[in-house]
Image 1 (tube, one colour):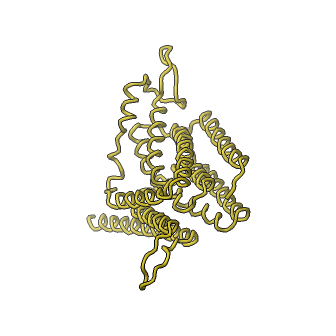
Image 2 (tube, rainbow, N blue to C red):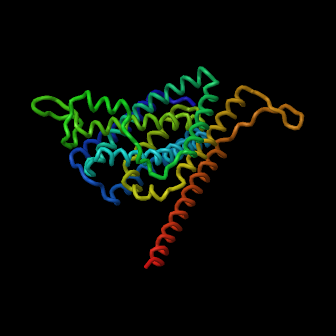
Image 3 (tube, rainbow, N blue to C red):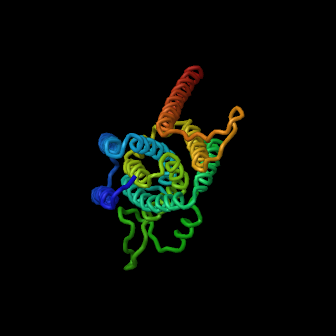
Length: 333
């Protein structure tokens, strides 16, 4: 897939304009967004992503269009897992609700910059070293097992600032006064605001999540442009998603299990793809045949099924638990 330079620059330019507009508008009037506000904006981002995917389908072919949708859905689902930690970070630092939008925006900007670097590094590694697929696949399988076996009963309340954040808080002059700016002046000196510390925490957290999401999407497509655009569309709607489903996140009790299955599936797909590319045979009924490569259409179908089953099962369990609590309360009375 040959993507001209102007298309790369146009894509990054449009994303930059949208983010700058968002930062300016939110910084001018810090507020807690209404459900209608975030729903409309999120709807616009989702519509734009769908139209982009259709455009990719028409211009570059059905396979590339399917790769975009598979990558976009995967990145969106993994972003939901990010939101659990984002909520905890906001609570730990005591971020006033009216400043949470601007914190998320700056965090998203950092995430886009870091992920763009990761994407190009990953693309270069894949082009030079075919064995990278084995590394990516093994890492995703390890992450899937770790995610499935970790306890999430406490909702992530054990999150603590890492060594870098702790060092920054001690070493960099800062103030405790909340403002919509990242830096301010105190006694004639330029100091960091609490918002800046939160932005660094959000950015570093997303960096850790990128270690999972970038290999995962490269398991679905080898096209850096599709990887970039899928990440951009997923991150663009993350702020609205944070405010829209903050309460719903607590009901997605099986989300970690669903994401672990998703990562495991992509990890297996990566390893099979590496074996397929290296033309390593396996024995089937006495005959040597090539290792199969999972088609992208099957991958997209698997992603939709995994996410759909996870969501439905989570909501079903939550509803039953709430019903049981009500019955227990009635019995106690």
